[in-house]
Image (cartoon, rainbow, N blue to C red; front, side, top):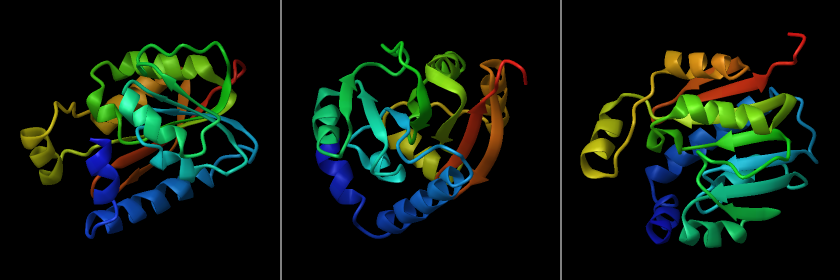
Length: 188
């Protein structure tokens, strides 16, 4: 998949879609107060395309379960790439920021995943994630690609709240719905 996905991202119209999605995600990141030298975790980092969303000075750990994807991601500027399932995070370390871009449609138990994310975030940390909307494009992906789970936006927000994450912003785009959450302080 890595050998096909990266070159395809550079071909129009996918290149235009990827560029617009990246711009939308960067606008959401601008809403945070995460410092440039923050500690970040990129969950389901794949070949490392999400790394470019955070400042170069950030201390970023990538997590992916595919050895092949992890090898590609290692060259993308991560501090480390950990081979693990994002549903069973092997961290006791706290992070200032978590990313999960283009991955949650492959995760059945997103409610449990949100709890894992909340457990590795500092209080007042942020979580940026995306899901695929229920569109004709997603229907084609579901028909001809791997198993995809469609999560409704209201489910995502509820699962976030149940895990102690507050919705900061939500944005819709043709191929993804983006969510920015913050971890609530104990006093909130």
